[in-house]
Length: 155
Image (cartoon, rainbow, N blue to C red; front, side):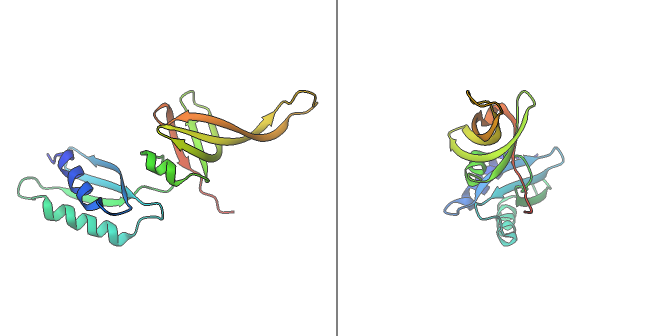
């Protein structure tokens, strides 16, 4: 079986000096290798091909036959690494928290594993008869949410 650490080292070598970052590496028991990379401005197919060739040049098919797939992290897929959160600051995201509550709002900031989403919701204000809609900051920890993903909008 192909060693994930070896693939990760190869990907890290290729990424050095580039603005791309590694999102995920998966290796199945049948030696299917799936590498996901991302970039703040999107991923170009030519770069996926270049990374794929780099990996193939450094892995021997004589030692173990494998299938290799290199691509970008899907736009509507849940975030897997902190850099994805950083890239989407100022954009609308959907968060499913550990209690199963889903919210949509503007990703305001990221600090380590913590992030803040401003959610437009009704709030009761003392002295007012009716609730007022306003942005309320919700703080989450990346490791304690079920998922966070970018909301694709066609407005």
